[in-house]
Image 1 (cartoon, helix red, strand yellow):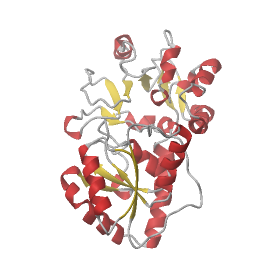
Image 2 (cartoon, rainbow, N blue to C red):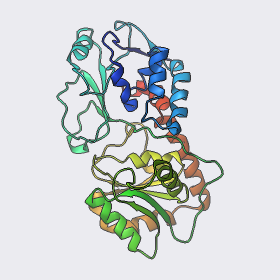
Image 3 (cartoon, rainbow, N blue to C red):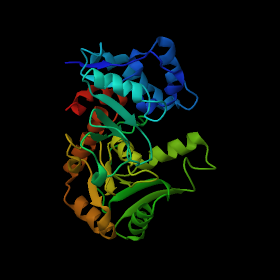
Image 4 (cartoon, rainbow, N blue to C red):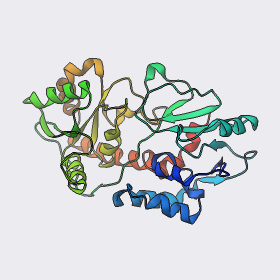
Length: 316
């Protein structure tokens, strides 16, 4: 059954199209001209366009635009903070409907929103999480290549490509790199988006790094979430997530322990032992099955179309 949504387009501003991560349930109902603008923004790489085109082609199989009286959910048509959300929230409240608010941002600040809002955000903490707050899946491009599955090896091979942006990330990488029991496949960058390296080469190296390793090290950067977690899943690899009290997308319906090794930040000093133990308990067939399972869970939940398909899972 389709999720029925209401969107107030009366004062829609095309400048809001700059935020592709906040609009997966909005753009299927925009004009053709606006959809074209959404797809062809200067900062939208060609690699992201296929998953956005798939969204536009199939979203209406899963969601339907209705009146506010008939809808299951009201959608705020912009990232929270880009404009004044008050009129939209009040409109939903007057109709006795919940409104979905998206805050795709590195900030973990408390949002001054009531229980009549369903809040989806990327960066926040379990200890401050409100009952109406959920983790937003960060959307990445799809660089998956078939027939590239990794096999069980003598030492676990762990990938990382990025900057040293958080102390816990630095410590985890150091411990893995210094261990003779781990094969570390690390590329350390000097800043965000690999300064001094062309964008095309940086993207190619980043994805090859994940693809050529069975495990991917994932730990927060500026915000309390890991974008890399979804990227590792997209390649069908196994995330090693250092849990800094982060909230994972769909954790109310997905058991992420079946897809990743999750290590509490307080146990970071034992990361090598945890990886060795985890790897030793997986047979060769387990490893192949987990790679298939992780690729499938990414397609189901971490793509824009997957997000639209599962809008109903956020409605209480």
